[in-house]
Length: 279
Length: 267
Image 1 (cartoon, each protein chain N blue to C red):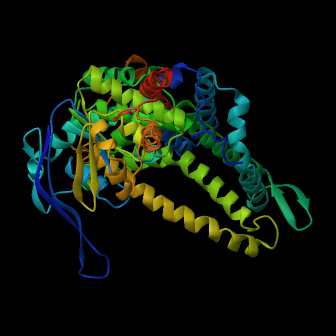
Image 2 (cartoon, rainbow over the protein chains, first blue to last red):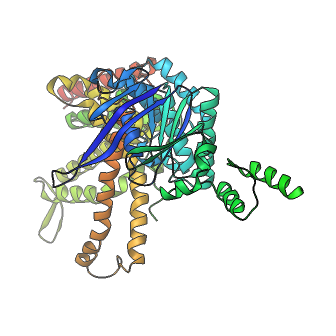
Image 3 (cartoon, rainbow over the protein chains, first blue to last red):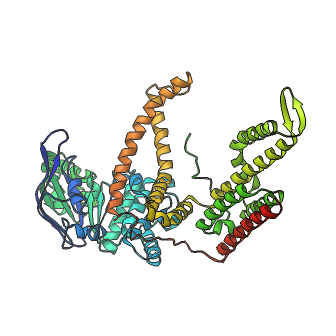
């Protein structure tokens, strides 16, 4: 679905000729239907990388292909953005219209979709994110999690194949985060949507199929969540955490209680803990 | 403190006036203003008054609601009336000190106030019965023919929509900034007007900075949703004129013709 080849990106520093290298030689292949979590501490280049996926930023070296389409080809710009939709951090700053349904219609309206078809897409998108009841609400009357679900619906209405969430849960409270996570997991499972989730919450990353860790513009870890999160020391070096239960089992292991590696969820932890204690 | 605001002054009642096409309503509002300025006889004003009264009745908006919109204009109305009563030449009605009220002045004053009153009632009725979205939609469509002379109709409508969308968001933010600055010891409620105006600066600067940031983020988000201006854009809700819209347009045209007719023959 998304393929990068030797991707490089620089930022021009203000008031000097220095260029900061943000992305260094990134080659990734994200197949269709995969749920990928992108991790990295601040300034690791993860947002920049995500922005090259829908041609908001064009790489300065290397190539990015979205479903085989080259993002550096300007003629394909809208085709690419239609395929790879992006949801941002602040829910307030991405909703355009004063009524939920009008906002969701914004994308398809831009694409020149027929009104009848737009109507259908708006309804489908609202159902997919479970916001049908709020069709004629004003966005500012909704909670953070609801706004973010509307933003996701706005992307869905363009019928994308991939949805990129750039720290979309960062400004939400725990219940809002859960709403959004449940929604994207549902989209991933039911609609086979490719999901790229940038997050600081390790518990969220643990729910993905694949975790990619960036540091100083390079891919430093790439694998299944349990493979990545069992390297607790390595992640700490990269100034990242691990899910709480993973850390707990890591500490227990150091103290002599070995529950095994790759514990990512509380349920899993409890099962294994009970099994060990029960002995 | 700034939380409870309604956008515009839309008063939904689902009446026939509400259901009229916004383009038709905007046109009628404009034409009735023209009519009021052209009108030159007693019967013409009577017709205009009747027309607006019927519209108010059909809209099912409480009359008190409309009068509330007139309150800020009370001063201008009284001022206009007084000026006209005393400064028009003609037969003396009564004298106060050196000021002379005239018979003609009273008539002109009455006409002026009636004209203002009807003007404001008509436009208030437009905003009371048309939601902001419909209004912007209507304006966009009505301005479309002017694209030829480089009037950016789509951009104007888009700006209006975004402004409406962000009014509550920015109000909320202002509220937060006021609280944050108060917590740091800022005083907005005492001192001279000048001092209070100066106290607003620490509110406005953060507000401006965050607005620019918001605008930047919104622009990126809009680009991500394939926004490329008005060309080739479709609409979720297409405005369509129905029978009632033609009837409404027909009635305003009749009214205008009658006014002109009365001007010529009864004036």
